[in-house]
Length: 301
Image 1 (tube, one colour):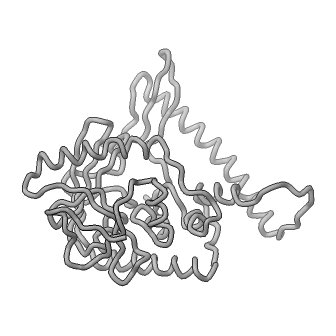
Image 2 (tube, helix red, strand yellow; image 1 turned 90 degrees about the vertical axis):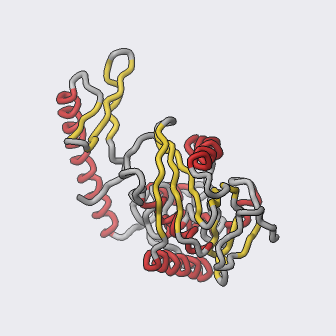
Image 3 (cartoon, one colour; image 1 turned 180 degrees about the vertical axis):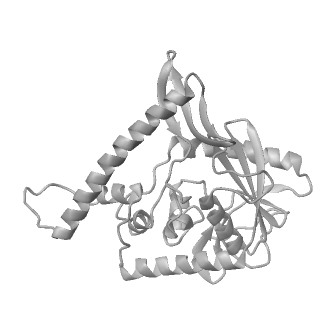
C-alpha cells in the first residue's frame, strides 16, 4: 500500500518506500514489520536492547513466540507522545510537525522505519522516562544507546541527516537531544540487520545468552511435560553449579552492600557520589520500603 504524504511532510530524497500509515501495535502495524527489522528492534539485533535479545527477537520473527505485549510504560509513552510533539512544535515553529508513515529503505525492504514525527528535513522521536538516568546534557546526543540505534536506523531508512529526540522525564521535565547521521555507525547496523535476516532465512538460531528475554523465550518454547530424565554434558553441569555458587556469593555481598548503603543514607533519600546517583531509598508508612539502584543493567567501568 502506498500513500501520499501531507504537504510539508515529504521524506528526504533518498527514496524510501512508503508502506502505509498504521496505528502502533495494531495488526496492520505488526504485519508491516513482520518481514523486516524496525527501529525499536535493531538494538536487539546488535545486543544493546534492555528489553529484547537477539535470541528472543529471532524467535518472535519466526512466529515461535507471541509479539511483545504492550506494557504500562509503552502505553503511557504512546499516550504522552502527541503532547511531547506538540510542545516541540510550539518551540520550533520554523517547520510544521507532521505524523510519519511507515517506510522501507530503498532497495532494502526488510529495513523498516517508523519515526514518530517529521519536522522539515529532520525526524522526531518522542520518549518518556521515569528519571534522568542515561540522559546526558540537554542539546547533546547523549541518550540511551538503544534509542541512538533507533534514530540512526530511521535516518538511514529515510536518507535524513538529523533526528531530534524529545523526552519527558518524570512527567514534567522536557528535554531535547539531537542525533546526527553517522555513516559508519549506520553501516554497522545495516550489516548486522542484513546478517540477522540471513539467519532467519537459513533457520540459524542465535546462541543462548544471559539476557532475561532469552531465558523468557526458552521458558515459553516447549509445551507439555514428559516425565523422563535427559542427559546433559558434564561441562554444562559444572558451569551451572559454578554459576549457582557465584550467584549465592554475590547475593550475600549485595545484601551486605545494601545494608551499608541504607545505614549510610539514614533518613536521606538518595545515595550519591558527587553528582552520580547510586541508589534511591523509598519509604512506606515511615519505614524503608526498598532501595532502588540507579543502574538496572551491568555496565563497564
